[in-house]
Figure 1 (cartoon, rainbow, N blue to C red):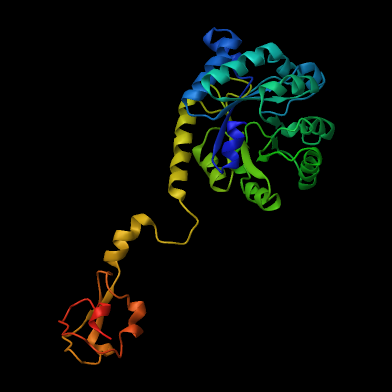
Figure 2 (cartoon, rainbow, N blue to C red):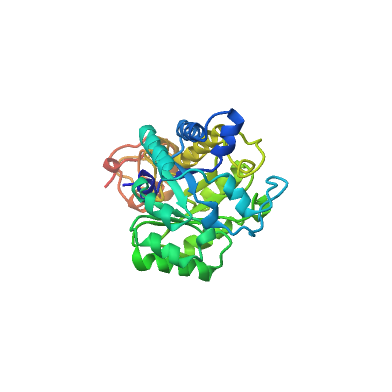
Length: 353
């Protein structure tokens, strides 16, 4: 079973590093092969404590027409055609992804890759324990159906979608597949300005799809507050683009985390998880000592002689709380003292009847 899906089902946080196709630029920057760059990124992700790495598997010819316009910030990525951009990064195929999959097994980090066509959806089947479906395919119901029938857990990004479109996609999946389903809020704006992050949508998704897991796929420039807010609003899974060099121009480097960022973010989430504690309304074990010593007991406000009927004015309330609680005052008032009780003595049950 997928370790990532198991963590999700246990209610634990999962961080997915979206390597995508960033390894091509890393290869050029470091003067190594794309395969070596991809493996280096996987290793850095593992060392940062990341739970899964995710690639993107496509061929430009099956993904975009040659007339497809850009939809990203061309100051960051100057390519004006989707086809031209995707063509730069589509040389890997089944053999290369299988090699990366085997390397992930060696490192004990989960391998994922988003398929963008039927062929890759098929050959990735034996390499993945869960499928990721891109927001761009949310309305591609034939493709969603094809993946759903493979009977594996699915992570579905819901960027640039309306409620009815999300419902149709979810219903399509559920018609064929009852495995774990994760909906990832995201904004298809590269990069996403902070004021467009629209993180409250996470809350709405949790309310609307109560039987599903909700997460967040982020496209803002690196900012821990964005990611931590998403987590605090209920995103159990966070996916974020990953690079080894945030200064590289083009593609997805300019809104990605590097290994140092990722490690710090994961540590911050681990801290947040450690302080959340239990939902139970009860005294903590660690509070027991303070509870006993800081609360008050019924105490003799004056000396009480043996045989006296104990009255309210004879009593007061002081720390520690090791005696009879003030909440049980009625159990003491009107009783007969069985012994002489000195002033400032904590009243105990054997002192009266």
